[in-house]
Length: 300
Ligand SMILES: Cc1ncc(COP(=O)(O)O)c(C=O)c1O
Image (cartoon, rainbow, N blue to C red; front, side, top):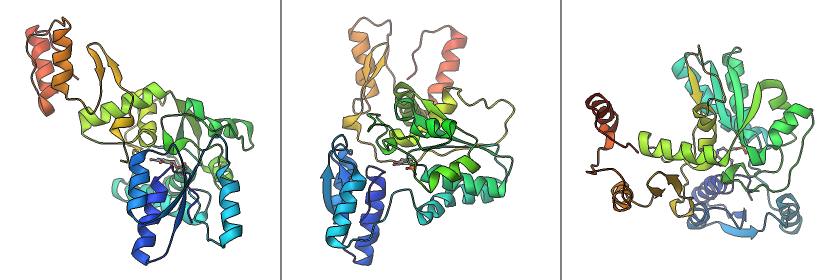
């Protein structure tokens, strides 16, 4: 039984693994987990028990289920096995790139961060490792600053995978030993980063996965003079229907509405545009051309 701290990513992985192995699995998931994660977990055949994170501590619920049914727990982050798995992404990247000045990863319960930090510091002792949390879920930063595990009330961040209330007993001392700093980003910065990844790089990254890059884009991490850096941007379980619209000069931009519709809305509202073109990957070239030619142009 996975005790789900990944609000669904861990749940999906365990549900699929159990289906492949023919092992029955029960997953504990918060009621506000994104439907895309809930649906996938259910489709892999897991029995799902939902709970309200504001009212029930999932540890208490899973402990009760274990004592009733004798389940084996697969924790989402506070386990040496999980950390070892998390550390493989940075290990493989270091093997490929050879050098990294920075590793920046999101931090929820700290499994991804501590696993990545162990790999990075082992191979490259001078590489700086930074964890990133949403401002309103900054228990990790508080813990690192105060030298003891700080627990916060269930946070309401858009980054559903980072809604954990505290670091773990195993992850915290490792973070103290191997992580240089934990910093925070606002909800707005996370959303803007997702749109940036989506519109410019054609990458679908969920809010929790975008948090690390948010810190770089918001220049919270000074990258001056660095040559190689790795920002771990993972997790594609994005439910576009649940995303807030981004306020743009021409109105609201949603991933499920077309760019052309948005711009046409702006035109209809009296925007100073004359023609709307779908430029796709040529947008940057077009922008330079327009700047040189003195043509008014809006790039999204
Ligand atoms: C996409 C994504 N990235 C990162 C994390 C952080 O993981 P951890 O709890 O190991 O810190 C999570 C956690 O749910 C997540 O869903």
